[in-house]
Image (cartoon, rainbow, N blue to C red; front, top):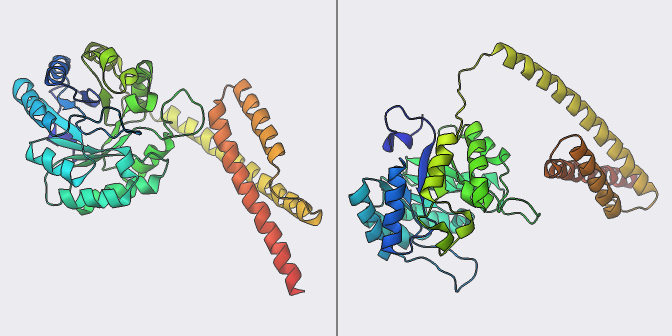
Length: 362
């Protein structure tokens, strides 16, 4: 089923996750090799390091470039690890392949650009190399799938994806919102794709790496790609989200991997309860939309605008507070209310348009 994992077969007796780890950036040859040796001692078999680093603004450390390929070759010779790096342009891909890099990943900014993805796909055409595609910066499932399809259409068969979270304007504990529903839906549509979690970029803080890694395992992810540095506090980029190899070893040792074979009798009873609750939810939502249509007609008859911003803000504040009192996450309830509100507005606009069209016929 999984075309990527046999390329990097696990050690005898080991289970999920397949771990890819290493520093955000290859900074110096000494730092790169030291990090790799420490990670190899922890059992990590695939070493990652960024050579070309896309930065939001100029002036920051943008990687050592092709010079670092020799450092990764040394890592392979001295540790026996596989090596991986990010590529964002055809030039990056060509240099990495010529240098014997074992695995390539494509970053979120590149995934978001279909032109860039097609150029990379063309550069990789005919190559036999594993490629992992990160999700785009925005929560756009179709854009993510489209990027994967471009690489697949180039003949790449050892293909997987990385969930690294999504950029959001909302204040959150995360650097990038997990929005787990999106990788879950991707996996539903494409179960053949191995899926990795990048807890470093989702969390943005090293203390979040352990709980995010556990969440990924609970959701059945195949692996983790984690930023680990021999001296994380001295890292040249993203130091807040990097951990040292010893900490990574502890996190991996404490992960709980759920068994897939479980008794089904009690589970089926719980699923039946969920089904009944879902039926009730659908009935309540349908009734709510019918009321929304009545509100639309009332607003039309009385010359009122459809969008009532103050009312909406009051509703968000009140309902999210109620959700918190009931033990639910505020952000979850806020996202649900936004979707319901958008559909209510659409229903009201449709009701008004139908009324207008009906009047014109008379």
